[in-house]
Image 1 (cartoon, helix red, strand yellow):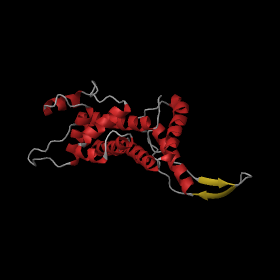
Image 2: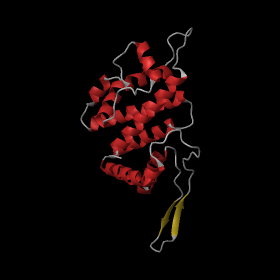
Image 3: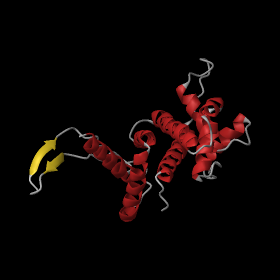
Image 4: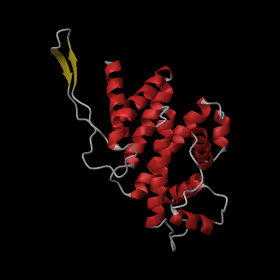
Length: 227
């Protein structure tokens, strides 16, 4: 039963990562040697029928991407703890790509990035646990992106975030630093009640895209996807 539940979770994660939205899996049935159904497990699957906001894998590439990701996920069987981290980070990514307001989606995506950084940087000997505790979240995510070969520079088309960086007076800040500055503004109360300052709509949209891209690229890199 445990193995069956794990398989269902993995199929859910794989299909959902490919589709960019939650794909229901069910019912799960058991068959005997003659092919007759001898038991079934009925449950309410996680499923969102609406079109996802962002999808990284074109439909004509699914046949190539799905087995590659499945192989990568299966390769984590010898490291159950990391497998759980990938599962949780993948679900963070799905939630970040859902219909909720951007103010909610951005912190969720950043939480997934922090979780991946915490696990990957230790597993691959980039940082010790004590070293992780001394770095801010943005620095840990920067290291995660560098491990994954993902550029940390702020994309040139993100003018709103570039303008925010300029107002902060941090010309050397890259994508992770600007992203987590936005995240911090969303999750912490403003300093002054008279003039509450929150990111504007363009900054929210660009920060959400950046966080979503970072998270899904890091996940599929961890699964060994090269497409």
